[in-house]
Image (cartoon, rainbow, N blue to C red):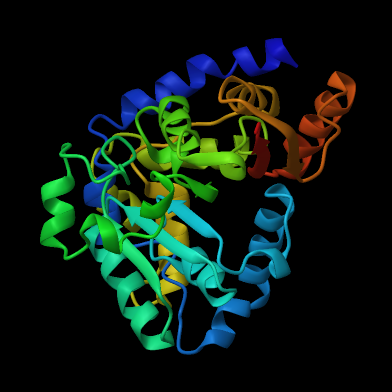
Length: 305
């Protein structure tokens, strides 16, 4: 398996060379994601979204009944549907994202549903909940989101739950940003990350390589996918995110497990489920993901008290 994975390194470098100027922030300003249609609270329970939330809860080793009054940080929240789901369960949710347009949608939906979820424009590198004068705090103040109004401030900026779903792999430093977010989890708290899998995403990587060949403009890449501009927002956003996002990285079970261990977590769980104590089971699971094009996986753990 290791030799197989290493064989993809040159492939990924080739893809990266085709995408000459990663413009992640610009991309998500133009194409907020996931842009789920939210008209009422019931939309947060739509089947596909509910399935995703159940997987996150599983990896956080918790359930809906335990969420009330807990603090949660949704790092790289996009248009905020996951933050809103947790807020609906009674959590004190805070979400941040680099895209102002995504955060604008998240805030509008929070207001529409009457949910107390806080959203702020910020990045993995700059986000800080302690109210210190760091790069980015001026922007927080401009947004009317001063420290004492941000969920989590009463706990030295630490959270019961931190989730990074589908965001780390679009950042320039996935592990470094994971470690930054892991530092915001309370002792005894839990974290869940959702990432692209190195083997399971092979077919999509090939599609991306073909689409990006000779291109450096993500709008032209989207046009090459054949998606109709008048398509529903969620469908359009999904195609754009999957095939035209300027930067993405790919990861393995063992790699991400080591991140959790380095950050002081234990009791790791993954979805799809795998026995993380068995190298053989992990090997077989990743072969299954390769064969079934399971391109996305979740892993969670509990921070040592």
